[in-house]
Length: 258
Image (cartoon, rainbow, N blue to C red; front, top):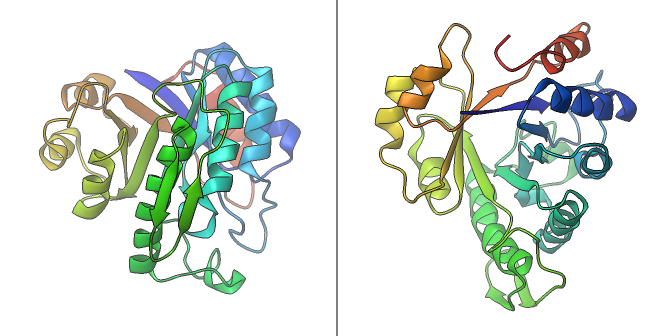
């Protein structure tokens, strides 16, 4: 079992980098950032990709990534370049977490981005195909409804055949799971499923090395998740009006599960 900290970058950038270095010193295996443009009218949000570049230079061991990037509002070729750059900066430690994104009104429609979940799902699938090719260093010929790409980009990622892609979605909805089985990992969110229910939902892994990345429910032993096929446990906190940064400091400053 491995453990990651999922952090909303809703505080000053230096604090986020400090949380990452503290977490690595405490034994965490991964450090991931939420990817939002807006949340509410209180939080001050910073860009996760810029922060991950700084964190890559300040850490040596942890995997680094987004949890999650909503690809429907990103140009996939730009995400591919961000991802490869992070992978090189970190020495091959990058992971791309993707999903539809929330909330559809505040974080999408009010900025002029697509809010319909069916359209965003179609854009996500197309974008993943484009990113897969570009990050791998292959020539991409893609003529889709939403993206048209006929190009290759250099350099490819250090990780071969490419940077891992984890797909998040609300459990027990089946479509996100079906999408995740085509890629490198599944991040079930919401639902509050117990380990046995998760195991029944997910079934056998589609291939060796496929990750199941699950929010760690309070009071559930890590061994119970491991028996259910979970490979990563996630801890985080909700960005409230006050006190949530201190909660993250406490999490980062202790070994996972303490």
